[in-house]
Length: 336
Image 1: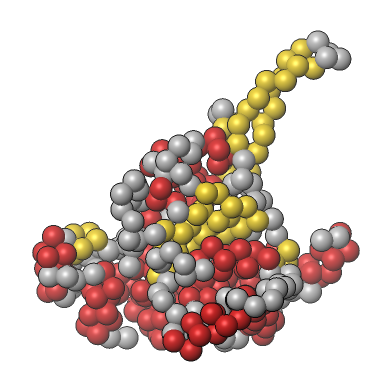
Image 2: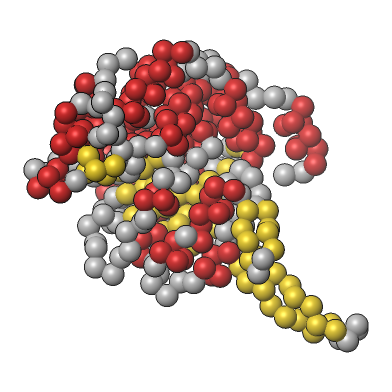
């Protein structure tokens, strides 16, 4: 983007209506390539506008990587893809320092070569295929927007949106993400098989002629303004209280927790989950062009926010109870 374009975008603050229009433009561009999956596209867009990071889970062949790459193509931002493998090292992500000879000065100096984490939209493909040491290399970047190499901190550009993919059916040769890193992802989005009509379109449209061309329809400045606008939206006391009651009800030690939580849950969600619920609800409202989030918005983002933050115990696993089943029951037990 030119300096003039940047100045123009800063001179025209993004409004609530403008943010809704921005989201629709992005979704329309993504929809040119990714057929169907409207709910998945919305959840990823909600996470992007909320300023979080997203974990996308689904079996192979559902266009997870294509969806993320298409989103990057629709934005004037730097995109980077990291293919996680068992032999990937932290330096392959963060960057490395090299020693160079200065022939003129007759001295040696250390130069830092940035890694692929120095981008705005980062696709961490099959993140569970690399050991925890390498997985953890993303933690500082995701949380603090910086990396430390050789004792020197290097700031990352904003906005920063990390989307990690995970294959849930292949467990051999994989390394499950530690709970501390899972908690850094605002949303855990589960991508399922497409509907029959959508799959028919996929088969017909992707096997003939060249694919659709995606045009950039948003800038980094616009996304940053949208993220700031999300945080500025007011939340009514009953919306905050509802998010609080939902989070506290996931903890087995809480006296207010339903009996099925004490029966099925090992660990409940922490305060970061409550923050994600409110920010997600605000972003959901902004996507619709509404100035305040509703109780329904909290309910709408409950599954992607909570499914990776509550740990079911052995009894639940033996009964075939998943975290999504627990959330369904929780939403029925904790009324707005």
